[in-house]
Length: 507
Image (cartoon, rainbow, N blue to C red; front, side):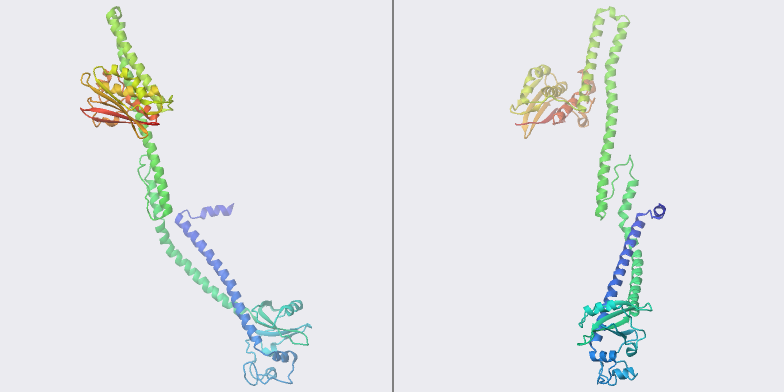
């Protein structure tokens, strides 16, 4: 628990420092691993090379020479020596005459072990500084069984009685007709280890220099690498609920950072759309409540005024009473129509429930022809239908769509010279219904808002005909509930065209 707590307290909190510390730690571990492997491989390489050299030295000496050294047979001394120099016979070597016949250094020893258990150290003949190390009889007997006279490069490490370590190689003299003799040549590993340690010290110095150089070079590179991340942090500090249009920088040259920036930008875009939609919804709800209150206040004020007149004595006059009641009846119908439209819009905003069935769209409109002609009055009405269009529709809602558009055209056209045209044609997989008139038209600043609730381009004329500004909003909701769309085109002074596209099965 305490080490973990200390680690948390002392761990660098900066990402740059953490990356630097982690990288240096990994690099140090790799260098340490390389050093250990270098020590093992180098030691084995040096020991094997030295063992091969020692085996070559042993096999370059005639066997009779070793027999005379081991058994002390000087009756027939050799006429030559290893190096071809006169006077280097075993007897002269033992008597101290001449140089070393085997040309060995002071750390090299030679010994012989015979099958009868005799161990002979040739220290006096080789003038070695130390005695030859000795194995156990069992180990020597095992070596007598497996050792051959061929060079193999294999070696064995022997610990001498004084604690020093020796590298030893063995050769079978193979004396026929007598005891088998195992020749042992060894050298202290101290000088070899010094060479290895010297190489390791050089490697350690180079490793430390590499770490220092890496530290000096890695800091600027790491600082430059983390610049895109710092830019993202600065951009994040500038973002708040009222400033969601800020975006994280992209294409900074780092794939992971760029991918993260794209993800954050997508999230910010969705949040911005959500906040904007929420603000628009709140504004629309506020405007809707104000408009609804205004629409309801007017008829209620009118009814309240008529009631006050009646209470003051107008009720005794039948003509005044009839006019007041007739006016209140009209206002109540207006309130009732407004409430019904509001309830319909509320249902369409939720989960609209349509009673759809497959039918021919032209036949529905054809059923409305007499009613439309009555509403048109003296206006000229023309029809242009394609009767083969079929689809899944709610007939009552489609009739309401046509009635709302036709009623809107009637309101904005002249009674004597007005013309209304209704057309239905197929456009690919869609049915296109258009209602056109030659009325006063809609100005460009009002055209984008004609489908907004309670919106009127001409408030006085709409109230005159009992409109509340919800007809086109209801028409749009009904069209969208059928999977369609509605649009408006208008030229002031020449007329307006409303176009509805609905999906159809065949045209």
